[in-house]
Image (cartoon, rainbow, N blue to C red; front, side, top):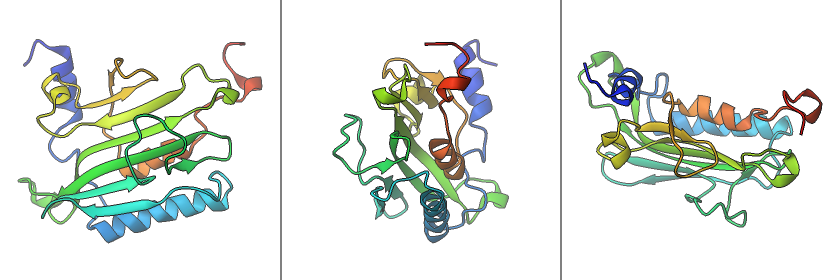
Length: 191
C-alpha cells in the first residue's frame, strides 16, 4: 500500500470498471441520453432557449470526442457557445470516450471515459463567492494522473484541486443543471 494518501484515494476512486459508462453501449445511446436531459431542462425552463450545441467528433479510430457548447472554454468567454441556465449561470463540457477494452467481460460493449471537463460559471449577480466550478478527469498518463489527482475538481481556482469521484455523464449534467446555489433567504451564512 502506498504511503501517499492521494495515491491511495485515487486507487479507490479509479478501480477497474469505474470509468465504464454503465447503460451506455454506443455513441448514439449517449447522444440520446444527453439530448433528452438537455431537452427536459429546456422544457422545465432551467435552460434558456439560446443554449449551446452537442458536437460529436471521431478523434481517432477508437476515440470519440464530445463537446457540449462546441469548444473548451477555459478563458470563460461568455461569447463562445455554451449552455445558459435561466438563473444566469452558464456551462459547457467536453469528454473523450472509447469502447471499453479492459479485461472485465461484464463491461465489454460499453463506452469508457478517458477524460472530461465539466465547468459551470456563476455571474456576479448570483451573489456567489466562487465564480466557477470545474470537474476534471485527465487522460491516463497526464501530469495530474502522475500526481494522483486524475479525477478532481477546481473550486474557482486553477491552482486549487481536490480529489473527486468520477462522474458519469448523466450525473455530471444533472449536477450542472441542478440548483447548486442556496437562495439568499436560505443561505447558511448571511452576506
